Image (cartoon, rainbow, N blue to C red; front, side, top):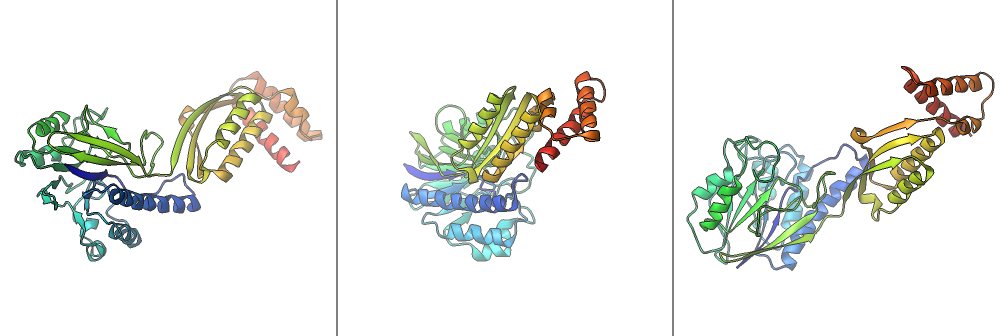
Amino acid sequence: MLRILHTADWQLGMTRHFLSGEAQARYTADRLEAVRAVLRLAHDEACEAVVVAGDVFETNQVDRRTVAQALDALGASKVPVYLLPGNHDPLDAAAVFRSRAFVAGKSAHVHVLDTSEPRRLPSGAEIVGAPWSSKRPLSDLVADVARGLEPTDTPRVLVGHGAVDSVVAIGRENPAVISHAAASQAIAERRFHYLALGDRHSATRVGTGDRIWYAGSQETTDFDETRPGEALIVDVGPESCTVTPHRVGKWTFHREEFELLSDDDLAGVEKRLAAFPDKLRTVAKLGFRGTLTLRQRARLDAILDGARDLLAAVVEWERVSEIAIRPDADDLAGLDLDGFARRAAESLRTRAAAGGADAEDARGALSLLFRLSRRDA
């Protein structure tokens, strides 16, 4: 029986456009710290090897600092590490794995799966890679490698990267899509006993049983991920295979919609944002629907401003957001306006309430006037 740690999609050097400079720096540091947590976990769980199933780096053009920090983390590992080039860092002419900085700084226990030749471990078990040599392979790389493997009863892990046809909803016509049926047949023929996959950032079992898995990324990267921030401990042999997920990441990305019609609804938004436990490592993407008065809209803006001061980022979910502003008499009564300004506000309110082509512009102008007057108060 072979025990390995399966991880993938570290994408070191990744940036997120919605993070400010300070939050991005914290995110970058935590992504690297999650890698260190993965390597510690492998040692603590007595793994014989760590396999990283593609996309170690965000691109082949990452800076020297990112490469140096990655090699420093890898160098501290007490378990041999096997890195697979993926679609983000393929073995093309600019491959980071062939750069002077990487080759000179790589420790002896760090191995790049740059060919499909089996790598023998001290126990006799084997690690086999299906590396990407370009960003657009013209065939199923996993199937290509599997066809060249002889059946064996010695534990063998095949490390691949890319979409599996039974998992992806679109793009199945891509010649590089991994055939679930072909991989399952190769496992049945004992050409390999576990398929360690990368590309999908959520930990995902493919099919039934535990012989084909995506490890997911070591840290959250987007809002639609269901199980990011995990690493998999895999116990594999010809007769059995078990996979045990372990949480290693710290960040959470939340995507939520709110229906806003009353002050109670606004209080619900405020309560929800306050409930996030690790605010410095939380990103909230928020969608709002409903109808608000100017006063309520101003309260919502204040709630969101307060959340931005505490959370790593607050992102407006524009695709699902639609808030109508309906000024009422109390809105204008609360404004300290007289003379021309008061008459202008009344005119805008009348036009906004009447509907028509310029109603939306009138509501926008009135909302701006309300916010400016409240700011001066």
